[in-house]
Image (cartoon, rainbow, N blue to C red; front, top):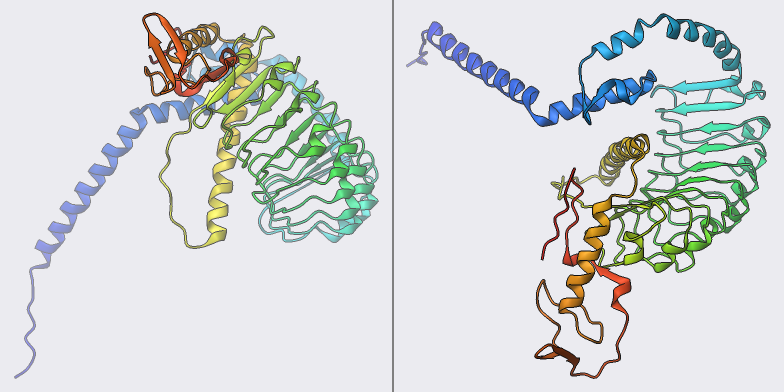
Length: 436
């Protein structure tokens, strides 16, 4: 007996699939409409417009109305049609062509090493190499004695040559988001260096002491690495104005951090800090301090009550779904991409703060005062903080309106410290919530 072949009506099957395809396209269309109308899409459009306006030099007053971003594209069109701007651009093009003779630029994943012809261009003043697969920088780097800027971000560089110490005129070194695990001590010979960016390498744990010689440094970014403390050499950089050591493994800050008396911006978010030292109050030029408030237990009240115009920003980390990856390299790459996005956001946020030129939020002072009053209400005379929100510690004995410590502990001065577990500060347009 042969095989039986069952023949279906193919028109019916086609009709079923066409119906399914139609329903699927309808769901995709509705999902696209929902995303376009969502707040996330609007925020994305606003950020894109702000970045575009900044690139074209459009003043903030042109695209902000009552504090909100006007996403009308006519701002960009009007700016592009301005004849005076076109004339100024034409004049600058000639100067740019002359200047570009001294600038070397290279990008693209097709590059795995620098071209051999580069060694013959020792007159160059700037290198801009990014988004390549280059892993090593050749020793002939020492030939470029006029080099001022060395931008090597987002490559695969795993070490810097010792010859980098020969670049006596180097002012900017950016090797962010590479695969560096250490920095050569010879870098300390670049005494004219003003900006050092080592962020996003993920594996750097220490800086050589020889970098203490870099007295002209004003900007240091070592974020997204594995530092357990602020390097000693950084504390000896007397002209340092900007220090970003966020996304590391800091557990505390050195008590002599106030020796950085020129420091203006200190970024400490995404570390493991539980308290801030009082020495921060002794830094007269510190104008911006950013921390993660989730693990902080103690903050000197003088920071919140500062009269020097200090902007104190406490960030709250939101839980993010963990992606399980078996490949270690894939995990590191995902972390690196995440750090790049976060740095772009923080950069835009800090630029916005500067543009608005706001003073330290007045509600922060009120919140600090309220916190101090509430913490004193339930703390013991020995200075131990309250338990939870409204309970005195076990050693506190209260009779009528009088309180004493049954353990006979000597009194301390708790007014110098604030317990961040007592309150949540939310920066809004007109109010601050303080939880009792």
